[in-house]
Image (cartoon, rainbow over all chains, first blue to last red; front, side, top):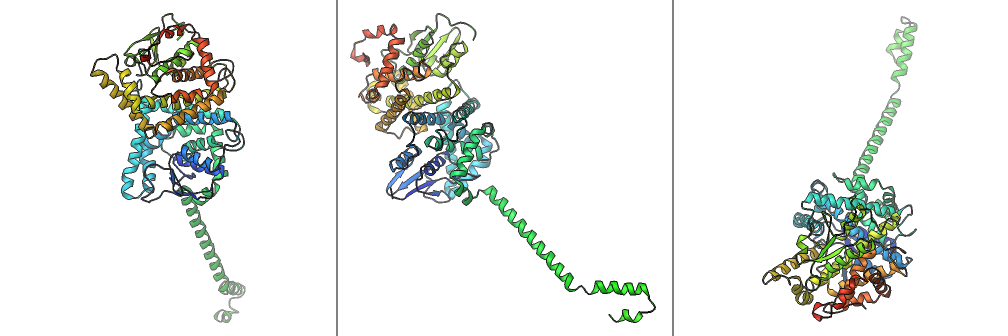
Length: 312
Length: 262
C-alpha cells in the first residue's frame, strides 16, 4: 500500500484534467477512492506516448488498461465500491458495457473522424503534447484506429456508407445519453451519495463531450439538453478536481486572466500618472491664483496699480 | 406494420447438425425464445447459405409476410411495430437497465464465444473449420472459413481482444455470469414475473454454452458454477420449448458435438 504509484496520461484543457476518456476515468476513480497517485501528464517527452495511455506504474508493475488499473487499485484497498450491493455491482458492469457499445463510437467519431473537429482541434492539441517526429505520425495513427474500430464494429451491411454509419452511431449515442439521464434521475451520483466506478466511467466519457469546444457539436448540444448529466459533470469537477482546475488553468482562462492583469496594470499606471499630474499641479500652483488676483485688481482699478503687475 | 402475424413466418439459420457454430446457434435460439415468449408461431428452416441470404450478413433472420429482418435488436422492434411487446410493463429506469444488460451480454458473452471459435487455434482446427465449410466442396470450404476467420480476427484486434489469452476470456465470461446471476437472484425472470427480451437473449447464450460440446468443458463449467442460471435455463426450456425439443432427443451421435441438458 505504501508503494508510490505513478499514472501517465494525456493532459487536459478547457477545464478538464484530461481530454482522453480513459485517462479521465482512471483519474476520477483515484480521486473517489482516495488513492495517492502522482499524475504525469504527457507533454513533449519521448518515453510516454506509446499510444497506450493511461499507464500505471507502481514499483515494477506496469498496467495499461483502465479496467485493469481499477482492479489493481481495488486490490491495493482503494475501493470506491465497497458499499455497493452485489446487484449494484452487476448493474455497474452492465452500464459500462452500454457506454462502450453505444457512446464510445460517437465519442471517437466526434474527436477523431469528423473532419473539421479533427483538423482544427484534436490534431493540433495532441500534436502539441507529443515530441516532434512522433507528433506527425501518432495523431494520424490514433485517427485511423478509431475509424477502423467504428467500421469494423458498426459498419457492416445494411449500412453501406460512412454517412449511414455516422447517422446510426449518433442515434445510438443520443439514446444512450437519454438512458443515462433517466437512470441518474435527481440523485447526485448513480448509486446514492458517494461516487463509484460507474460514476468514474460515466464522467470519463461525458466530460470531454461536455467541455471541449468543437466546431461540430451535435452531441454536446444533445447533452446540454439533459441538465442532470451536466450537473453531474460539474459537480465532480468542482468537488474532486478543484485543485487541478485552479492549478492547471486551461488556456482559455489563462489568456483572459493575462488580459485582465494587463488591463489592471494599465489602469493603475494611468491612475498613478493622474495622481502625479495632480501633485505637479498643486506644487506649482502660484500662477493661477495670482493671475486671478492681478486680474481682479486690474479689473478693479487698472491705472492705480501698474506697478503691482510688474512686480509679482 | 398493421398486418397480423402470418402463419408461414419462417426463421432461417444454418444447418443445425453439421454447420452451425456456437455463437450463431446462441443468437438463433435467443430469437426463437423471444418469439415463443410473444406467442408468435415460427418455423425454423435450415439452409447452408443462410448467412448470405441475410440482409445484414448475420443469422438468424426472419421472413414475415414480405419483409426480412435479421438480428435480435431489429426483430424486437419489428415485432413491437406489429403490436407485440414484452417490455411494455417496464418503467423507464428498468428499460434502461434492460438495454444495459443486453449490451453486457453482447459485449462479453457473444465476443467471448466468437473469440473461442475463431481465435483459439485448437478449437479452430478441430471444430470451427470442419463445421463452417461442411456443406461445400474442397477448396471452397477452406477458403470460406479462412475468410471468415480473418474477418473475425480483425474485429477482435480493433476492439482490443486480440491480445487476450484464453484464461482472460474465461475470466470475463465468469464476471459476466456473476453479474447476471446477481441480477437474477431468486426471481423467476430478470424483471420478476414476466419474461422480456433480456431473458430470451440470456437463455439463448447460456443454453447453447451449456449444451455444446467443445474441446474442453471450461466454458460450460463457468456457467454451471451459478446454479440459479442453470435453473433459469431449464425453466425456460421446459416452459417454451417442450414441444420443439422432441426432435433433438433423437440425436445421440457423438459427431454432432452436442449434448443435452437433462
